Length: 164
Image (cartoon, rainbow, N blue to C red; front, side, top):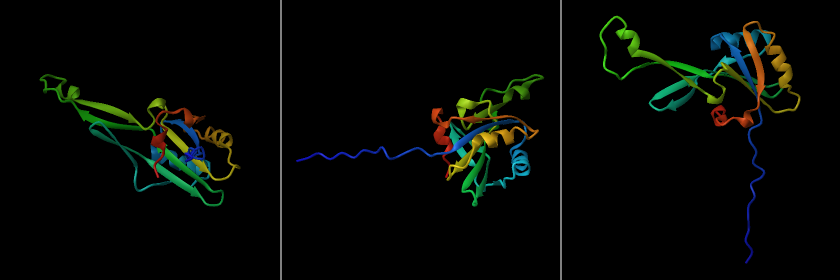
């Protein structure tokens, strides 16, 4: 009797381009700047990207635009979530008692790239899309400090970019 084997080589990862953006703007202001200068139509999704870290939940903003003419989907993702955490230690007395009780914790969507403020994920159905051209256009926006293409296949936490 012959043994049959199934080979699953046909499964491939999602194919998209990922651009890291460094900017001090709030997420809605960056989305507005991208809409204005790059002629996108990003809008805020009803549901943010939510993750549970230990005992805390983090919510990362998500803006999307579906270009039906060129079959591209643009997603602007925040990489940082900052929240206030109260310490469990006993309250101390003195001049700086309240300042010591409150501290802030920052969580990252992609922990390998902690310095990145936002990611622009582009899912292109056709081969006509050029991420280099888009990156060059992003660098013309005055509020963006820098932008560059990231190789998402080398990221350990690339599954955090799957949100649909």
